[in-house]
Image 1: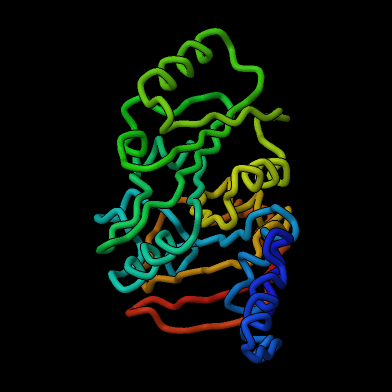
Image 2: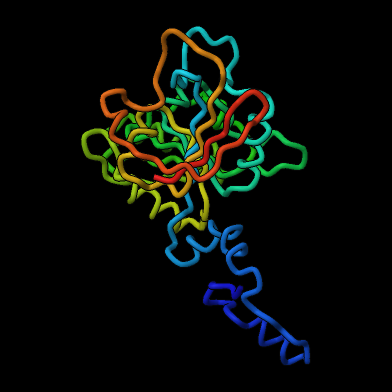
Length: 260
């Protein structure tokens, strides 16, 4: 398969042929496209490949006061998620997740690489003590382009404290939300070619409604909680018809890979 990057397209093949080496192309082309789909999307569109990961209980909850551990899913799934974080360029959450769970959003496998941590925060509500701000690697906060005077001061203080580690992308908001297509287009221009989205109910719902995710990974735990937060807004739960492309066990969990 030829590299579709216009800067190098075909040049490697030409160099090999010039050196007298016989070259065959398009061998296992389908398989090559499959394993390079994230790169191919970004290099052709400059829009990141989006993997939406939803970890939930058997009755569809992503959070509950009943849960004793931070993770709903099991150890094997946790290792798989950290491998995704190691592989993909960025990880994106909404600010509500930061406030509620206070995650680090790092890759915790040996010799792993932290993804760029991306926070959707229209009104710059992120706590200045949030763990995500104190980890190694780059942070991007996507915030509104009309912050009030107090939050403009907060923004300047974060820039002064974190220096080149933090970057703010300012975008218009409507009814308290961003246009997600605008968000991902902007992130693609930052050379972020693939993003793992670990959203809460609001972000999950918005992504599914907009049909933006290239791949949806739903990890179902055998746990059942009586009360909590559903993975999407219940009033629109019956409006999606996802196509299952793969289903497999992950320890005691079930990993369902879908397309919207």
